[in-house]
Image (cartoon, rainbow, N blue to C red; front, side, top):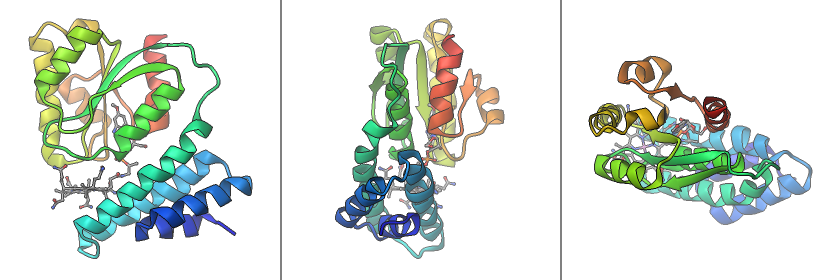
Length: 210
Ligand code: B1M
């Protein structure tokens, strides 16, 4: 019998094989993919974050949880897709320079792709010049910037500034997100939108282009 607590505990333990089994069992029992994601997996990463902060978990253990999360998300991905797959717009997205966190950004990518966006994912630790080049080449409707560290939030600001200085700002909407980011910060750096989670990111992206 797989329940959300078992899923959360297995994610925290970083046991990806067991996690896959528990997630599959939960799906077989009729649990919704979205519930497994938010109340099982993301809830587990929150516990991992707390333990990392207090020194109860170290980087290698956190990485094992992160990798287990990625494996489990792959199982849920097709089940979280929306039916309507017509392209609704182009998105270029990445985690800003200096920041290696990608789990949240990957969820945003997944939700946006599911919602019908054509997404170019630049990965993590993305140089400002890479964003500028990709905007020139791909001509996206939306540029997404993710940051998980308070120390990389200024890089978000610099990225927006350089997009503006390069004359590319008028052609794109900029969306920002990540745990330390909020609406006030988005306003302060001149972003068009802030989303607190992956679900609202894709809804907001659609709304911005409507
Ligand atoms: Co790091 N880390 N980490 N870490 N890590 C945090 C962020 C931290 C809060 C942990 C803590 O101390 N409690 C802390 C930051 C403190 C701060 O800045 N004030 C921290 C630290 C300090 C560090 C290091 C500096 C540790 C060290 O080396 N001493 C180091 C930095 C490395 C670097 O980036 N240069 C580091 C390293 C790592 C790992 C590599 C081990 C690993 C990352 C693995 C990976 O991503 N592949 C890791 C992890 C896993 C975490 C925690 C535990 C989990 C992050 C996560 O994946 N959350 C995290 C603690 C926490 O957040 N509770 C922590 C789950 C994910 C689904 O949520 O990413 O918030 P989140 O994404 C959400 C929303 O924010 C939003 O939607 C997502 C889905 O709903 N969202 C967007 C995200 N991007 C968006 C973009 C949008 C819109 C919405 O539009 C474009």
